[in-house]
Length: 337
Image (cartoon, rainbow, N blue to C red; front, side):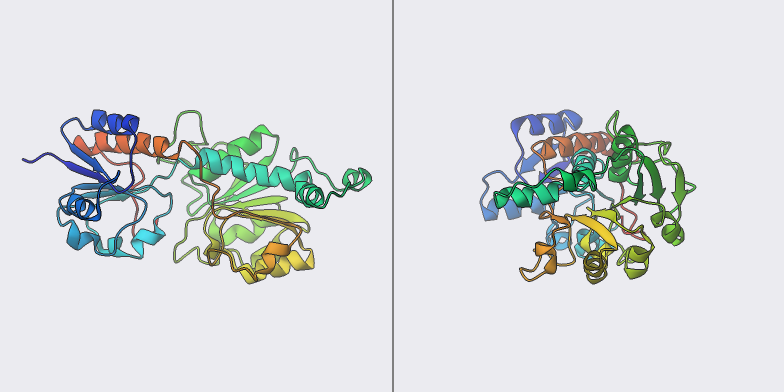
């Protein structure tokens, strides 16, 4: 039987290649590196396993022997809406590797709002000294406030762990509240794999009740047919006056027009947004100019160690694949994640 052929569509470092070869010593490994377009096409043609961010539209015809795709993203919507929607082999995500950077990003956004950094940074750019008095009446501590986590996956669980360490009360919403544990990839010491942190779990149809209790809300949902515009005008109206919302999931999970109206009216105190309905965000979007919005260009998961973490997960899944054990983070096409 020919050796397993593994192809990475992104360049790997020597330590990353070594980690993958150690996980599957008999496999043939090739990565993009500096290969020409012809070499790259030939490399994909005979692969059994692919490590990739994006999936070519003609992948299934170009790689007829493909037996597994490991995505480098936590979400799978881009792949399931393309060539992999009819795949008969497993597709796995990189869920779990983003927990630390995005959990920290979310807490940073909340802390920045609570301590009014969105105002002081704008004042700094104008060389304007703001008097301390206005902050005595508006700065909040996170301790003692309630965080609602909409989507209790790996990112939501690490966010909850960090929030609890700061003294916040945590509520969580998930598709099936009776299933509190998370069987997906979770590095040791991170997150809440057993689901012990939230004071209470809510089902999707109970979201208005949860939102009404929250001072801060983080949206970490994947994009599926069931989550598109999951947070709309009704949900935003249910939130506390002055509450702060962070969205790091997918832009289409929120009704952006309803969000803008809630921010303009003052019902929402502010929003930290890393994802948008259309990216890049249009230059004429009112979100750019809103004083109570912290806006970033879909970078909350970015960090220098991204590929190292991804290769750790991929190596573990390679060991499982070559010994016929269940893979981690297998996508359920019926659920979309």
